Length: 191
Image (cartoon, rainbow, N blue to C red):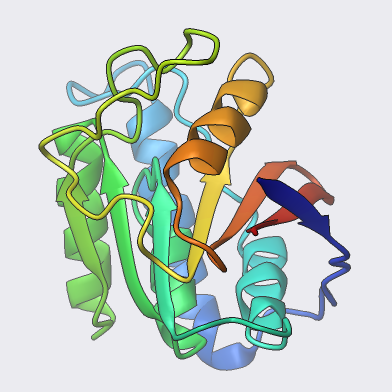
């Protein structure tokens, strides 16, 4: 059963050493959103680098985090995953769109960041169905709920399904950071 955990991250200015990464990510995001770009990804939204950094660095101080594993569901171009790696997490991200994964892998490589980005989905068959059936984990993403911390940008229509799925599939002690944009987020622990 999921229990909400108090979480109010500090959102400091982005450290100087992370600004080149943020600029490069913003440039890639602008390119991917350009209607004239052949590889355009409609609806792509990138997290604010400063807020993402505040979140992933503050998560390091949450009591009871069982290890340093971090997984971002729907990682896009991997900015949050890369920032998590820079904050000391063993970071991996999964993303359904192969073009975004390729951009994210190039971004991580260009900045010498050891983050694993792969094609996959956190939405198994039956994801939007209500309880009680527990949907099977997608084959493309084994260990989907095994990270100490899972981060997901929860679209409004998906937030309840994300909580329901994580609550049924995550091991005891796993944390879910459900981000909703701006400074709106909630942290949940599987008990």
